[in-house]
Image (tube, rainbow, N blue to C red):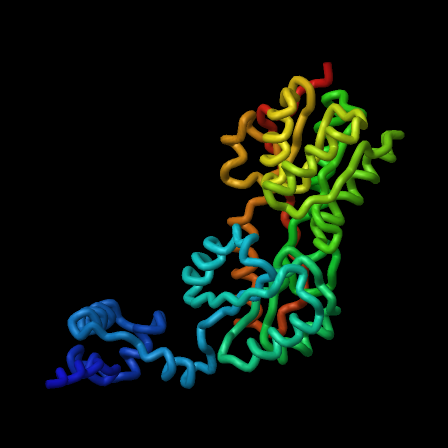
Length: 337
């Protein structure tokens, strides 16, 4: 015999139990300030007794909002800001949904993804891709009026965005090595399709040139640990001299440290190593990694808050919020002997 379904409590059930109008219950649920304290307490008590859950579909119809944010990201492997974004969205009263693009997605894939997502009931879009193909006007048209914020886009782009100043971060790292007396600096760069990797490489070359120096041996990796290991092996096999190594991210730096250890290269006595990102494990590398910290908690907070502000005020002026990395000095760098 099929069990009878439990009847779901309604707004009017809460109003009847609390002895108020359903409009008053609605004001309490939406945290309207113009409700007397005792009345609010009665309504909240009735909600608890009836285990009332607001009907989100009805709420969306009434308010014109779904209270859903959509994150479109290029590669789930680089999801370090994700937990903080989910937390910040929840804190703002929103649910965050996630869709993934293939690594370095082509413009056609991004167009198709935005076409699909903007057809859904969402209030705003966070777009986390390393390869922006579209101008602000094009992106606005692709988003069909849905507010959007680009996360980690190029510095200076004229679109709603929250970014780290990659040039500043790279300057801190290279200047640190120069101050330690290193003039022969090698590089393991990231993929040039990646905005951040491109900026870090270009900034490194520019700083060295300004000091009358040229870049030492430079090879490209793919941001993963095995790539850092294999690339460091190739740098050593090349026979080109270097006393310091700048690595485009901490994952590859971990691989490089392993390669140096296997070759009997001491860090930092023989080679100083600087990474980028300050991933959670960087302080526990052997030796602990000197790196450039990008505070992903702040990136997530600023991105979500900016998007929610745009949802509440569609006429907000377009701006780019710039965050500044900081150098974290640990045991993998030392003065040149």
